[in-house]
Image 1 (cartoon, rainbow, N blue to C red):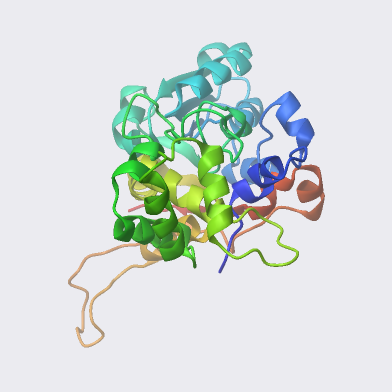
Image 2: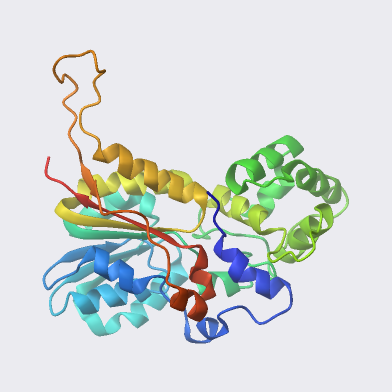
Length: 336
């Protein structure tokens, strides 16, 4: 299974010198992906409690608060301080019904109970980048970002991507690009980076994008920028995204009350594989070997899948090309 990263749709256009696909999105703000499907699956109602663990532009949060009016409440988390500030303005009309915290969702099990959301009716994880992040020239997420190659969601923690490029050896870089980007030319790109940094530090997104473009073959009719997978790999490594995803999924079992819904939007196969396997594993009951006559493991199912994964409609993709790579999976918490 192969996914297109959102960078294909957004930064690919920027890098090619064109107006980004979905240009209206950048003018009016982040458009929530598959918003109707998210709300339908979460099924918010008056008085319900929900968590949007990846606020971004707060589009999903706004829809959930509207659907759970007049007294449903929502806890919104984001590691990006700028996202929290934007969301606070967008959700101000909901007053105390919207509770916001700056935190990575890997801390969900700790932060949610402290905020009064120890047992909730729904939990959303939207794993995509927001348009704000992609177009922030100081963050380095987009190919044409003019500032330092940073890529941290929380700029107060961790190491910027430029530091990884400056300190990792050729083998480590190649392994990173293969593991997190599934990049077929990982070795060639890593070698080019190491050779380049001997005389010129690779410190900006534009530098890295141009370097990768020179290092790999250029197929005729290529639609996406050749650095897409490399940028994805660096971003995942810098933010330890897959570890955070596993922690967030595990927290859902603690926070969702019976009947509560988990909804995850993923944008590439590495994320979706983790989500799919998690739901499948938590649907299983007894895991005793077949030769054991009675269950001794005591394992019971924790989740019930809400059906096959869903993808955006043709109409949504036409209106918001960034949604093209999205895949939605849902599950319901079952009683112990």
